[in-house]
Image (cartoon, rainbow, N blue to C red; front, top):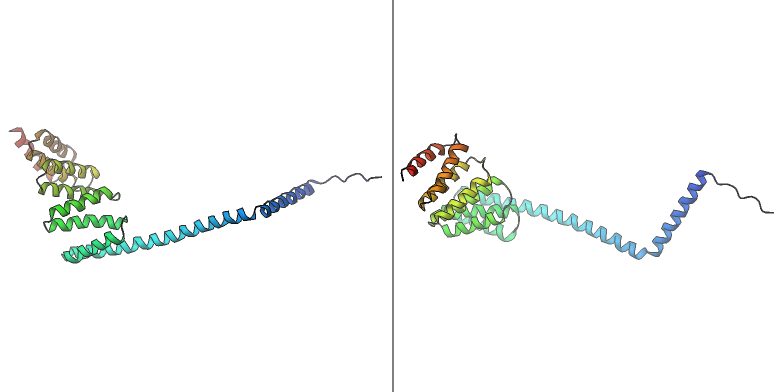
Length: 225
């Protein structure tokens, strides 16, 4: 005669389920060992690639920043030939870095100081097309390009870029000056309405600015035309 089956306790039921799950997991791994190994290898490989990329990227950023600093020092000391060589190296060896973009701005200034307006305009344009960092530096880039256009007697375009310079950072200390320069260029091409709009903006938005009195004087002159 068969003995009645012993009723399992809750603890024993949990243990049985745990053993059953463990056995199933083991069976799955044994049946799919190749796939599991591949997945594990891919994940670990990707992790290593990320680590290597971060290390290389950090090193690249540091090296490019150092090179930019050297170029800035040579520029401040008016060693333009050496500064140009360093900036060209920065552009060639570290393209796409923040330092390389800033190098374009510095190169634009360098060429402008030397009276090489066409080359300066090219560098400033490349800078504003590629840079997406500091608003102040972007405003300065627009202004640099505007100054080149002004020197090339492209007054209307120069005015437009001076306005862009002001809009890039309205709180920048040079913002009212950018509006004033834009107004002067509009006056050069007889666009008095646009000039008046910008001059009134200076009076209303920048009452403490040095250009405020100049703006008021220009408004009087425009009214007499």
